[in-house]
Image 1 (cartoon, one colour):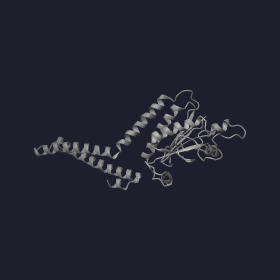
Image 2 (cartoon, helix red, strand yellow):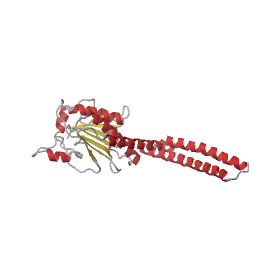
Image 3 (cartoon, one colour):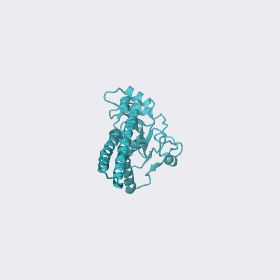
Image 4 (cartoon, helix red, strand yellow):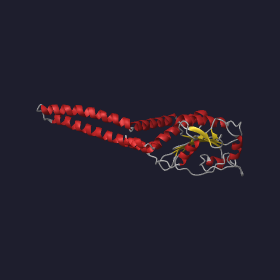
Length: 287
């Protein structure tokens, strides 16, 4: 196993026992918005980690709602590993002593994950993480075994000789989803693929913003104002004795816009209720 640093959402002054207990509790069922937001966070973490590393890496990102993992990142040579879950994150690497250079990578990765998620680091070996590593706990971790998937399992099987094991003690296991491997690339990733990924992330971000309660209410009020103006024009034409096609068109468009406004306000209330259920805030459902 590796020396592992965990990261959790924590409020100011909250006791770590309470944080760990909350992580053990059953989490609300994940929806598509939560999944997309989590994968987007993982992609930002991945991009920043790549800037810090020169070695090949492999990544895996969730594509469905069946699990609680958003993404996994593993460097080939150093063994640096980053996993992002729905309510936590993990940064680890094989422990080679207090002066092992990989520990600097662990510190950098912890800072990146904390910055992108707002989570706070916790060292399960000794308690709260202050940037230092306990040598005794690190040596003890060498005899432990992890049950996480090894993204480099096939590489390990092809390069390990005799009875030698992977330095991280990881075991090969199949993953559900696509593993992205840049081990055979001498240069950076294809800029066209990267641009397409960024465009897709931006589209998803805009879509999520449009589904926010405040955005839905703004669209609802726009429909109210526009529908009221068009309806008023239609009613004025009727009062003047004009019942032609254009008058009915004004009235029809006005009614259509007002119905659209009602739908926007209804969706806003539903979105607020869903957010309240996900956050566990009972008052949010009634607002």
